[in-house]
Image (cartoon, rainbow, N blue to C red; front, side, top):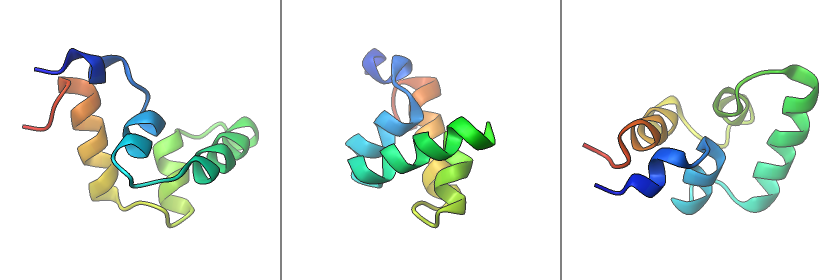
Length: 67
């Protein structure tokens, strides 16, 4: 098991997996300051990731790996 992923934020997991880039992460974080939404939902609304991408990232964050 990779316990390092358990402490990563969703944005970091998506960035590491190549689903988003650093510019998209920065834009989403800026949006989050005003909208107070979860970052994953912001990425979906930006059409950067799919719900499935988010679900996979959340599973990695929760378990430290993908089952």
